[in-house]
Length: 355
Ligand SMILES: NC(=O)c1ccc[n+]([C@@H]2O[C@H](COP(=O)([O-])OP(=O)(O)OC[C@H]3O[C@@H](n4cnc5c(N)ncnc54)[C@H](OP(=O)(O)O)[C@@H]3O)[C@@H](O)[C@H]2O)c1
Image 1 (cartoon, rainbow, N blue to C red):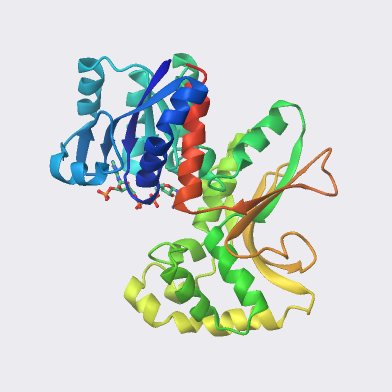
Image 2: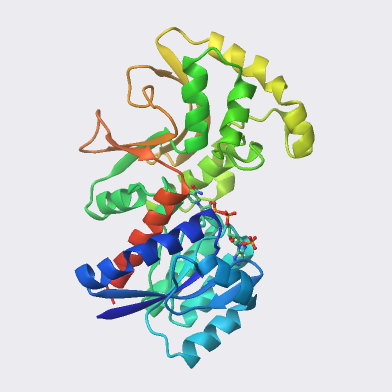
């Protein structure tokens, strides 16, 4: 039986769902895969808890027994309890925490991350991290960075490794923006109302401008581009932000929410300019051959897979030599704590099977 020890940073939506999935599936993992996944340490930004045999009541134990910690605490625990095969899971969105990755790799730990920051900091950091991983033979997996539980990064990596030249990637990369434009294009409803509804349903970030600014889509595009060997930075992505200048970050969130109706005439105009068989879609596009990264609002035929998107689905079209005219398409829920946690779980298993 291979024992794997997990150190889970971040017990918010995704982290806590992952813990529950791991507890739930633990007996089957032992039986079916001969792998014993032990959750050794869980923490938020302030408190941490060394654990053994967690059950589904773990949150109340965390609330009463967790203590202040630092990354050195993890090192002490690993050495005191002789923990082997340690995988650090990053279910935070913290830039601060990513700076600890080199420390963890030096200690011999593997990393699985939902956090996109490590892959979107400057290219120098990206390169140095990979050099360190190669030298220490440690793994860093991050399938959930793009498309949550969908196998987007893995597919692109496999195509690339098999010599199948990826020429273009295009699609709706954001579940929240998918929802907004899928509804806006098909219903007679104001843009601000859909935005409010998407926010109430928890589809957008607390500040919807984080979605509308296009930065999150740009990050995903950059991650895919770097996966294909393009040495680019976030500043190389041409972003058409959907937030007008007068409502950008200099305006407080409260002011933005009060003035959100100012978006309506802008999007009404874009909609009225569409012919009957076209819909609006906010897409990411990577022209691999010309190294052009763009995030933009486009007019798309209702008949294409992109034009037919529903709900919060994301969709990735991958054009290659072989998939030249009809792209390889990956589509499905591209956000949500269950699918994202399942994606992390799958990355953990990929590493566990190599140990
Ligand atoms: N939700 C999705 O559908 C989805 C999909 C794909 C990827 N992701 C990514 O998954 C990550 C987590 O998302 P989420 O929705 O679970 O966020 P969340 O609910 O806000 O949870 C974040 C967790 O991270 C903890 N944290 C923050 N900084 C930390 C630090 N320096 N050290 C340790 N813990 C720290 C927070 O602790 P405090 O409570 O103490 O601040 C909290 O427990 C993000 O990077 C997100 O972009 C999410």
